[in-house]
Length: 89
Image 1 (tube, rainbow, N blue to C red):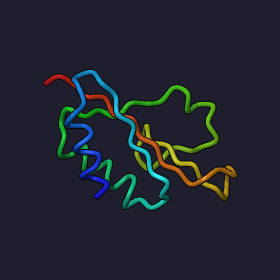
Image 2 (tube, one colour):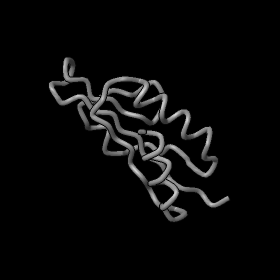
Image 3 (spheres, rainbow, N blue to C red):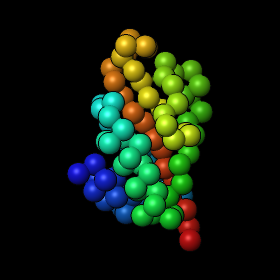
């Protein structure tokens, strides 16, 4: 379901637009696995770093330019964030 939601949102995005994929899950199946599959299926999608994340209480995800908030480490809610841009092809 997560992959379908991300794919549909990206399909509606204009070229040059940005889309943030975020979950309140800590599982790789709903986070990095979805991002990997999405990137394989959408060649016009590019992961973008988030400049503000440098000051966020988070760590990098398994995939570069993704971010994880771990409640046991950072005293935040569990959260995953990835930002995509739609490229012109």
